[in-house]
Image 1 (cartoon, rainbow, N blue to C red):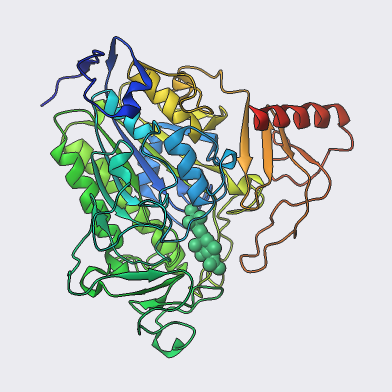
Image 2 (cartoon, protein in one colour):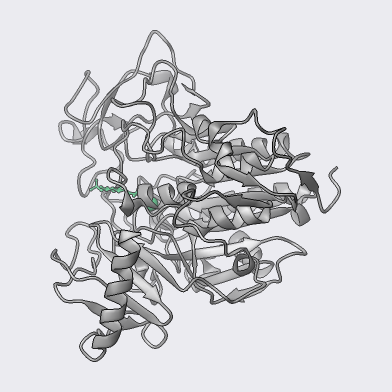
Length: 510
Ligand code: NG6
Ligand code: CA
């Protein structure tokens, strides 16, 4: 068993054998090396868990973690959808600075190149064993996409992860297979996989042609190849022995995460555990079916809470509680109907996934990007609530600092070190954060103010029924008195509009 605190020397030179990415880091002396686990939910709303105010649903494991840790009320992912938020988390750069970083199809090539320093390579450089388990959604392979039947490269292992067990894109996008290290898990070479996002390939039925075969029907899109009775986005054929079973995804990936923790318990590890819950299609294990009374969306929240509980229990059993930082957060805000008729709308009742916030996933309003954010580190982080402004983009610089490293110039360009805010030692948070809506619109939060840049577009997204935040005029809200962004006070505050417009422009041009 490891004694606490663990101190490891990062000696430049002896680490010279490590990847090119590491040469972009400046190693510093001695530092503390707690294990770090980021549990990254998918589409979980600000008030989808009971410690953030949900009353119809109970999430005891997340609540317990919050009770013993620091619960942030003003923490943000960088974008209102998955790919860009994950891009920022791993690169320390706002995704809107780069083309091609919006929601990716399942056959996209890698959007982070192997020469980039990532959150994982920063941790690896500090001597950590690094792993990613769960949803990836950052593309794989060279231009033209991954070779599903061969070696899948570049992938997480080329971006600083020693281990990966991933869902290539999303649960609702083909191919519906897991990848471990560089190959598709359980693939029979005599039954190769073909994937297309252009047109139908092979003979497998589609939701459009054979709706009678479906166990869950789409409400929008999602009418292409049927896998396990659910039609998806994209077409695939082959790889029958490798197909995942939706009901078992949480069990499988939680199991892999636990195994990674157990195998690395004696040395510092970094685990990015990125769950499929509570994204569509929502098909939780039968243990959770009907348990929330809110249909599959609520049941998926219970399943997510279970996954969190398994991680916490394992850390406790291994006596690693005092040497492990656990973060629980989400890639973007909530959506109720996200393209399947899964009773989420009908059974929502008075549950408000975004609580007092306006909008949700995809939106420029805070419902899109203000997320649950809980940090626990027993003995090091004082339990409580933090109202500090915090952004996921800062984890890279903050963990570099924690492990005694400075990021070289140009690395993680938008990531700032706010370790003391993260650990509750300081309230001196970053001055502003930028939020990015799915249509590309940017917002800026500075102090009490939230500014949404003007632009065209519909006010309400057709299928999801979510308010986009689009307005041809600038919007300004005082989040301190109006967290629901109900009263636009732009006209009354022309000087603030000017200041924030200019600041946002400067940030864009940085
Ligand atoms: C949308 C999908 C939605 C979801 C989203 C990405 C339709 C109608 N909607 O295009 O179901 O997959 O993309 O979600 O196809 S995310 O959380 O991965 O960003
Ligand atoms: Ca998401």
